[in-house]
Amino acid sequence: MVLKCSCKEHLEVNQMILNQTKLEVALARVEMPLSGLRKWVSPQTIRKVRRGESIQPRTVGRIAKALGVDPADLIKED
Image (cartoon, rainbow, N blue to C red):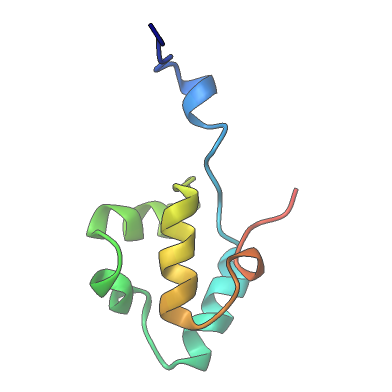
């Protein structure tokens, strides 16, 4: 039997935060407002991105694909 921990510490391990400046540049290159990402991600995810909160790696991948960039180009570095 495998138990999954639902505490905040362990949920955050696989989460990523986007670099706001890099995201804005990528959006500008494709002439898309942040709200234009609704085709690829939920409104809740867009709110998280706006607030600088963490999101799932696969969601970063969807955003990067929509913008035609590598996911690593959008991630905030420590």
